[in-house]
Length: 116
Image 1 (cartoon, rainbow, N blue to C red):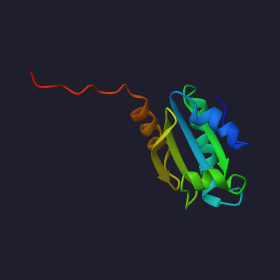
Image 2: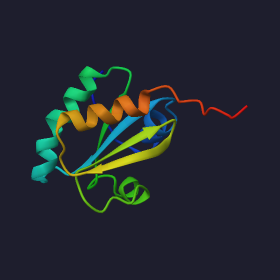
Image 3: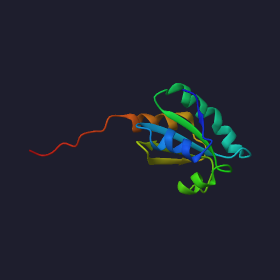
Image 4: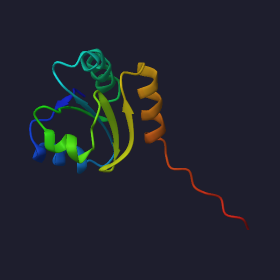
């Protein structure tokens, strides 16, 4: 699956918040050097994990979304599960870090054992 470039708040709601499953959101800015370093990693994740929605959001164009997610540093990547933010990673990390988080958030929920 290719990366979704968020163009509106309505698109974000439809593509990400209403999605049942895992989404990855990369909040970024065009002139941010670390954001440009992270870009190819995000693109690779989108190709490698077609069952995960991957999107990029420009904080300059969508200040409302950045404020709603309390973005204070970029780049920042959010993991969204069934419309709810479950984790955030600030800065640029090696691809394996994102892959481990995807595996963690897509794993079936563990059932708690009750004492008999």
